[in-house]
Image (cartoon, rainbow, N blue to C red):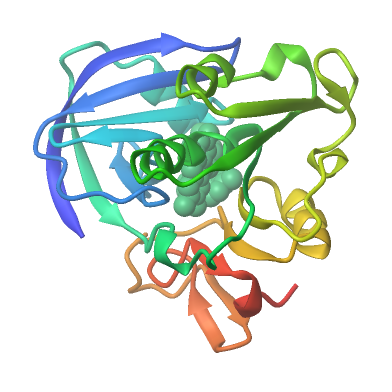
Length: 241
Ligand SMILES: Cc1cc2nc3c(=O)[nH]c(=O)nc-3n(C[C@H](O)[C@H](O)[C@H](O)COP(=O)(O)OP(=O)(O)OC[C@H]3O[C@@H](n4cnc5c(N)ncnc54)[C@H](O)[C@@H]3O)c2cc1C
């Protein structure tokens, strides 16, 4: 974990209530699937947000304004300095992908952003994979063009059929596939049921964000583990629903 003062470089809306913010500064050494925890003036608890993209001196986050904290974050001006904990969580582990596995990245709604950094990393390492992105409707679609620009075969599903394949992400063929999944718990469960193996990222409510308060503990096949410090990414074999 690293505490850093990061400057807001830009904030742009992606949809009505989803924003992309780029933070600049000494962001630490990051891995796809990790998250940051942002201190906001007037709020006791920090707000955890996944790292969508990163390089040596910037972090991109994509978040939905669901309450007062994220709303405050989205309205902060360019140049504002934020107190941020970075390098949090374990992140995805690419070396766990079995040889010859067919890899699919499956994101649902605001579970899509952390898969972008992973997709870039897989591309860099010449690992082939497909993407499945699930949303409720076409109005909620985020990052689709970004994945296309990476040259990834990307399927979109919408629950109401307004874009792409009508239905949930499980419309895609995930049988016998090694998946990296992030999204709402019902989606994670459905993907877990059909895939061969994989890594699943959880966005459980948490307080401290770095393993001290134990507030985000979940039961796993290895006993109780903390989503913030032992996760947020868990392997299929670790998960107990
Ligand atoms: C590891 C992790 C990664 C996340 N990544 C993203 C992301 O990339 N994009 C995104 O839009 N959201 C993400 N979330 C959810 C995000 O943290 C919440 O939407 C946000 O904290 C809500 O804050 P608020 O003040 O606007 O809402 P409020 O509902 O007012 O928040 C009240 C409290 O509940 C907590 N809380 C509320 N909803 C959640 C939630 N779903 N998960 C965890 N804590 C919550 C808040 O942190 C705060 O402490 C992530 C959560 C976790 C745990």
